[in-house]
Image 1: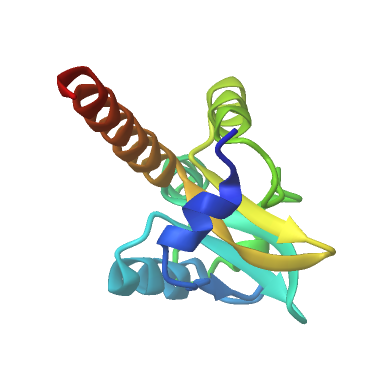
Image 2: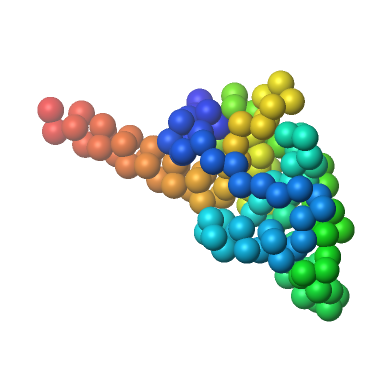
Length: 142
């Protein structure tokens, strides 16, 4: 069984975050700078929520709110669904598909370890399938 830990092992340990009182504009600037589509919202190193491009489109733009004048806490998704390193890749795909989400924070013992995106999961699955195909081809030709 392939696990979340295996994905984390392939990624640099980078957690991009803002606080609840950060403005939406500050969050967007960080997202652009880091080329990410979601940020975690942390207070005293504790996960409070997640803010995504989808949150921006649905909660700021459509309601005519100001990015500079709106704190993240007003538009973030609080208490995001999380996973643990021992969860399977299949479970991640199921959660992301069923809940229509693209990012899952990874927690262990109330400690944030990182975040897995749908892109990370797909990339991992493709690499794993290529490896399996290569092994089968080697087996067949030997």
